[in-house]
View 1 (cartoon, rainbow, N blue to C red):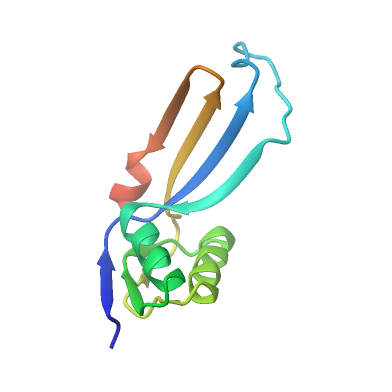
View 2 (cartoon, rainbow, N blue to C red):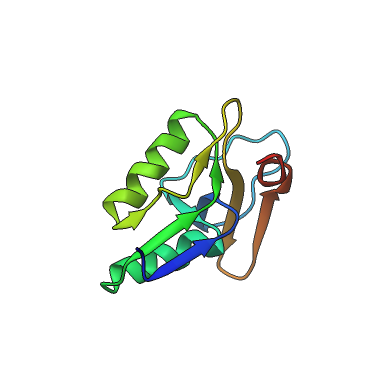
Length: 117
C-alpha cells in the first residue's frame, strides 16, 4: 500500500526555454533549449514523494500512444506505482507548451486532451 496516493490530470510538458524572442507567424525557429517533462499536480507530487524516499501511487488516466507508454515507464523508474492509472486507447495525455524568454513567458495547454480522458 502506497504512503501517498496522488489523483489528478496527467500532462506532457513541452518546454522551450532561453529563447531570444518569439518566432513570427510562419517562421521556423530552431532551438536546442527544449525539455520534455511529465506534468500535472498529481504526477509532480507522486514523483517528488518517491524521490524523497516515500511510497507513491498515481491514479490518473493516460492514453495508449508511445508517448504515454514512455511516461508510464518514467514514472515506474522514478519509483511511482501506476497500478491505479488506466490507459485509454485512441488518445494521449494532456499537452502543455511553455515558452520562456528573458523577460516574458507563455503557456498553451490542451485542456481538451485532458478532458477527453
